[in-house]
Image 1 (cartoon, one colour):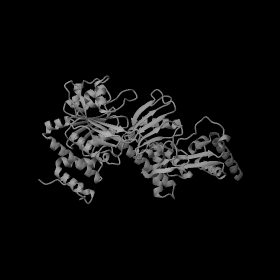
Image 2 (cartoon, rainbow, N blue to C red):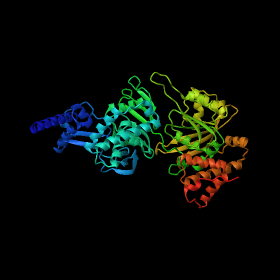
Image 3 (tube, rainbow, N blue to C red):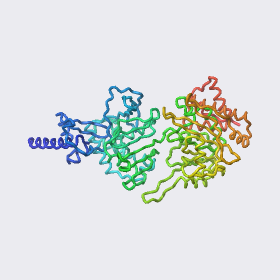
Image 4 (tube, one colour):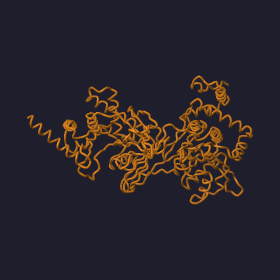
Length: 606
């Protein structure tokens, strides 16, 4: 009996070794499926081969990879990609790398380290270090994953709706903990929790890409093909190479198909382009080979988890704008002047637009409309966010930006916020809303203020120049191509002329040599509008600007920069200006509040 068992074991080992040597490297789950072996028998055989030095075993969070110990030239050639269904960290030599920065992040209780490294390459490297899992435990996770998928029903609404998705994740997590707890008797509660979160992340998420998306410093995640590592756009360092690789085109395609199914879209060879967004709000674009000739691609624009405010933008470490310009834009928002935020791609148009939203009075009804939810207003505001909807598989059910804009005018808005204006009809409705007394804020693609006027009044838009007179200000955002930093490049007002074509009056402009924003001309139109509709004279306007500038600088000094906290102080300023100014002035004199709680302003009794 013992001899028979020994003979069978050797036979299994020969089969395993043959398959590994043929492919060079293989995933454990794939190997088990092809051999039809029980996982415990496969585990035993793998351990014997590893002990004999015939194979290498790599134990990773996302799976176990088995490699032949033979040198590459000894392996049988294969034109087939490695049979893996994991994201494999890229193997890089880092002994001589210089660490630029590092941090630890927890994603659903999974700790992982991030390092930005200078390896001597042309670009910096973004290195993720995730927990390593024992070989046998990894195999057990793979089995548990299969049983969980078979036992639990998932509907489209469960992954499309954020609240439903959260409930779904909790159900999977609870079941996973129960199953792993029954098998891993000696494991601690902390270990069971970590393993369960890893498992659920693999089943419902995008593998190692989920870890990247947990980093608030990342703006874009790009998969170019299975031949290249994942790239990321880092807020502080620009484009970086990661140590993450999606090893097969099938895996990239499967991730894209999963996203498409979740949003009810179709992605096929006949329809190889996908534009959608994840449950987190992150925007996703996917393309399939051969439209993308090198391989399948995924591009994820990461939705900011911490919305920008003017207080954050005036921080010298960020320096997008200064407190003087921020105070001027605050006054424009307060008195309901319409603004277009313009700039090139990734110049920070939407971030700057979001930064102005806390200046809107709390008793004003705000309707926002976007292709993908990016704006985040204070939680107390009277705000109705709306998003477009692409057509379904049969081409029905589309809700365009034009549909939402037309509908918004019937919703009694005080302020209308448009994510981006692209087409002639959308532009016409935007100016129609301005003419009917609504304050409108929108983003638009143009490099400078004059280009906004030229593009809108020329074909294909061909909006009559006289119509543009309802627009008050154009704010241009700019991304420095050398440093990657974003700046407010111009603030300009539109002046009405007898000829009809509006004239640009440049108020502020960024100076590249000194990296500062300087005043160019005094305001003419904004000054006239405020004099006509508020009764303020020029001296009172300058005093008001100085007061607003003092409040913004005080908020920065106190470390108050969240969108809701800033908005609350702004609205306290509207209702009890003197109390807020008193706090700001006392801070300037060195009398700082004992703690941040003191900024919760009590209304004076009347």
